[in-house]
Length: 152
Image 1: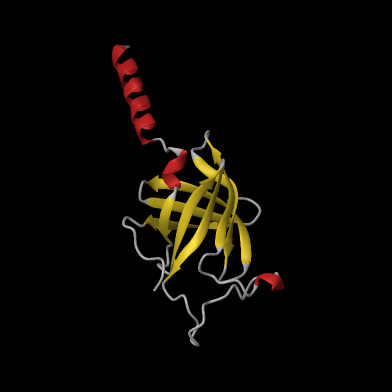
Image 2 (image 1 turned 120 degrees about the vertical axis):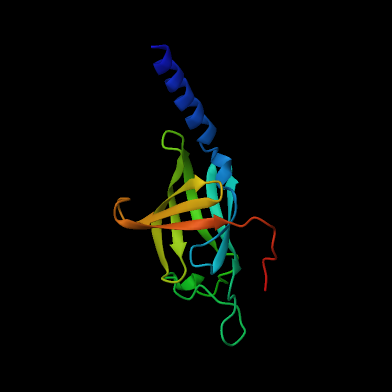
């Protein structure tokens, strides 16, 4: 009986040690394609993310890339660099992840429901989906470890 109690206590301690702190997700992340860096930050109890760096920030003519695929014509002249692409995430303590947010894909102009969870301190899983989470796609973003210039 004592062995079972000790094993249970050990498992609880291991889970507690590995459990995520909601703040751990903040910081700068390199997206899966390596084309952009997103700064994830909190405002009050909500999580957001800006596209702070692009591998290729300019068009062939040298002008900044714009949000040209946005279905809202009034937003198609916004610069991609600096664009808010993650919005409105809430911390779900029971499931240890951020959910009920949205992710905007500037390549397609589409917005998807989204959840965020840490695989470990340096890997962020981004689950974008339509309707229910089963119908979607997961990407893994890597934490940017050192401060780098946000421009080219």
